[in-house]
Image (spheres, rainbow, N blue to C red):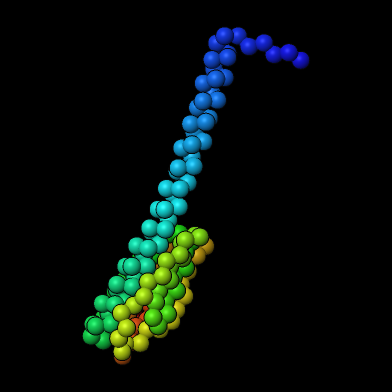
Length: 139
């Protein structure tokens, strides 16, 4: 089977090949930028939650802060000394300022199938900081 291309068809094929090569190059760049954006989002959320906990450590009892987690598949792990925020394949750990205030360890998934966002209620009561999902009230 022999294919004969006309002059206009040959130009179209060449233009399509060049466009595909250029598009392939841009797609690689877009995936790299997307991965960097996910990592920066993990860093930002970890910093914000750790800053809230650091501030609550020096706050009086019955202080609280509400924080909305992103509508994404992520996991927030809080321990006595650090926070670890995992978003997709990216993870970021941030240490707390060490004080005499106790921090209750917890693990929270940001998005569950039945809802789109998780809202955190971070409280300090009787010298203990607790992070939990906000249901009706923080207490």
